Image (cartoon, rainbow, N blue to C red; front, side, top):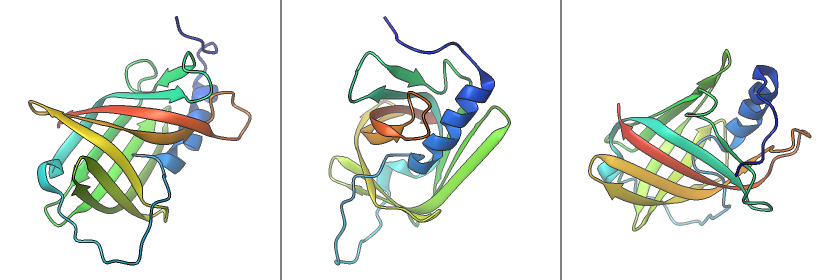
Amino acid sequence: MRSRRPFSHTRYGLRLLVFTGSLTIGATGCGGVEPVVYEPGFMVGEWLAETLLLTSVADPLVFTELVADLGAVFTLSVQPSGRYTAILTGFGQSSSEFGRLTVDGDEVVLFPESPPGEESRAVWERIGDTVILEGESEFDFDLDGTAEPATRRQVLIPN
């Protein structure tokens, strides 16, 4: 059973804008002074989100599926150098982020450069050609202008 508000392009458009601050993985605030070697590995290529599910940490019965339910489109392009571009579009709005991506053991790590942001991490799982990323994020579930802690699950397929 889902708990959600009635559909509204304006309402979800606002959610989409709030979500773009944590566009791909969601900030976890890990940092260090050691230089990072970017090894993008299996993430090199063009990806399309088949699923982009955000679930409230406070109430797991509250969630939003941006792709399947709301028609948003999320793409991720990763170059062999580790440079990435992520684009989220929906409801006549679009936002993008670019930076550097690396794979660190069981985590995909993003270092956003524009807009500037904190390092973010997600645990990855590969099933055939599909990559599943799960990590922390934020989303304005109650539309009060403040993003709440969320978990994010992305299912990426080759594009």
